[in-house]
Image (tube, rainbow, N blue to C red; front, side, top):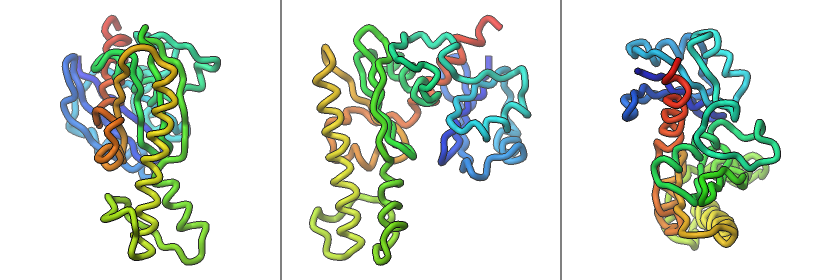
Length: 244
């Protein structure tokens, strides 16, 4: 069985071709550019039986509904996820967060924390019994950096990378140090507070656009797994298409 997996987020849409064992190929489309035509072009040479879409951008989900109709399912808590849900508003959990919970439980076990560095940074907690417990949502690193640029008259736009020093010798260097070191402080404190609430040795996995950058000097982030969300989608697809 071949699968098309779609992780549709605010900034980028990641597509993957997969089978019962692994991810086979990947494509990325900026979500702002996503259309029926751009999606067709991206997957033109891929052959697959079923489509699973995990979307947090409802208006763009219609692209895949138009393309695939009955061949497609969307990630919600109504599907067989293989993890429990302990959350007061289950339908409010983002599809990417559900996929991360499934992916981390399959690959690394539980208890676990997934820190996903996207447009927002999300912290999702899976208990030792494999139950999704909820989490934390904070502004993403790129959003915070752009806010300074857009909301001040004199501060420039910066490219996010590792600062040369915590003491900036230029305005750009000072902004970069504040962004990266400050963000690591935010992530470290939230992780510390979450770990204190969990039982057993907790695995902490980072994924998303800025995972490598932030994890480079933040040992609390034990593993960087950039395919975690897609892997979670693959497992969900196998559970929900295998008998169809």
